[in-house]
Length: 206
Image (cartoon, rainbow, N blue to C red; front, side):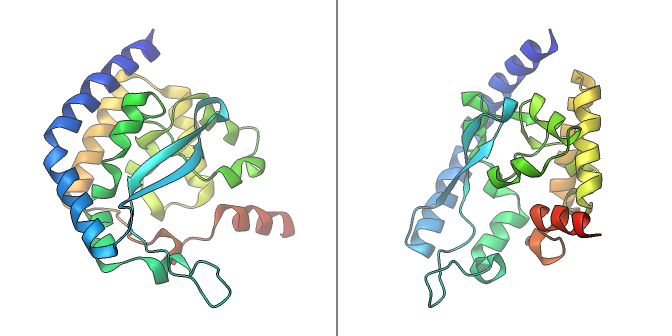
């Protein structure tokens, strides 16, 4: 019963927010296009519910600069000054309202991570894909990118096992307050946190 209620809530709220944030979305898209001279949207395949692949949509905050061998430079070297501001204000997340409207995502759920991470999840960690991924989740309001991978995964599993309308409303409220106060926001998560695959490989070596 709750999944149907949650989907109805997602449809109504995403439709409402798409309308009221349209001026911000349009302005951000235009500014990014003028600044970077390229598509202002970042589209990438991510695993969703039941590990089905969908295309997540965000505002692009990094350029496509490459080294002499044609490889993309590290994220920290491609993150633009404007992109830092867009991330800091969480404006880069706005296009994901389209993903919610389409049914790829929900407002609350485990964040959709990279497709390349799929082979590295433990059996318990795979539970994060038994629900729709979210723009925000229990891990995000519990420390966001300051959590270790183990703690982030544990929070995702905790959410899956205890999800309810009351929990979702609480997470949304905490997310709103953190965005307003700009708490636990890391512009470049890779600056202090190792990649998930590297983390898992290091555990095997230990």
